[in-house]
View 1 (cartoon, helix red, strand yellow):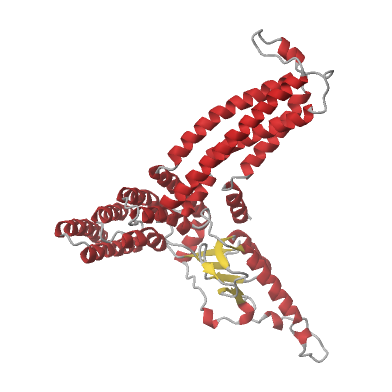
View 2 (cartoon, one colour; view 1 turned 45 degrees about the vertical axis):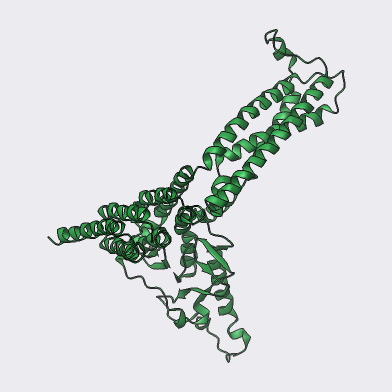
Length: 474
């Protein structure tokens, strides 16, 4: 259920309509309260220079003027927002737009405009039924003026924030912070199963050896946005089964693809169709003989399918490699011939180097979940450090194979990661990436001096790893 909530929250939190909708409701409610508040005593207690309104018609004219001006301001703010989104999509990549749309400052700024507009509109509607004999809504008028002044300053701060938000370094730091948060939140739920799988033998099924009644297939086509392992564990315990999943968050599946297997009951190896109540009469080989087992099997498959969330796009909050690729896309755009900005690519490499040490806790490519009695219930394929390193560095290295100024920082980051490696397998992964950088330099860098500089950086990584190996042996 928690993973499903995260999926919904990511959709709502990265939309430009949800927060303004809340502000709009708040503005309408505030206007209702302000119109009905008795304001004569409050206004009388204020200093003489405080403005006072004599008739309802005066308040209506003022409110109409503020409303027209504020609508123009909101239109300007939305136009500036669309320009920024277009520039960001072109220079930083279309997948970074979700970060702009999910920015709380942008959402709150637009929400303040919409909320003030709804306040003024609601006030005009309510004042439309008042006569000159009714009390003048002094509180509503003063509140409208105050909200308008606040909106003016919010507009200035909003434009300033948009100007900063399109700077590449700011985007890189923000996307990198989201990446670190995704890794940290994933580790909170997956570190235990990963340790269990690394300690015990956890094997995944062979797709060609599965029987149709125990095969788990994709319910629809799309990306696996997330898997609710906690609820899936409850399903496995309830039906007394063992579930093995060969897919993980981020993978693309086609409807009908084999994505897992329902293991046999360890206490009873007979199939569900054999576990019928005894019947003294002759057995019937018709549809009624398989009906109960088919019903039970369908119920199990439906329960499992509900825990595997499949959608049309990947989610950054549940898919670590997708969060990595958002940073990588910024670097690839910067390295494209049309932009040719190696400094942005270097900033991305350094930001990846800050986030990848946390990913070292994903030291095994599978997770194992047990019930309270210690019986294995779920064995699932997960992202590991090797896959994350591939997602982080492969495409950047391929695009910058002839750029020593980009390959050198990559080797330096590998050297730093080597000193933080927690498992021998991590050293081998880092060593392989260093060799790939060395081969790319030898193949594509024509200048001897530049090529040797990259080779020296690669050799430092290999020597440091060899030194750690020698120290461990001694």
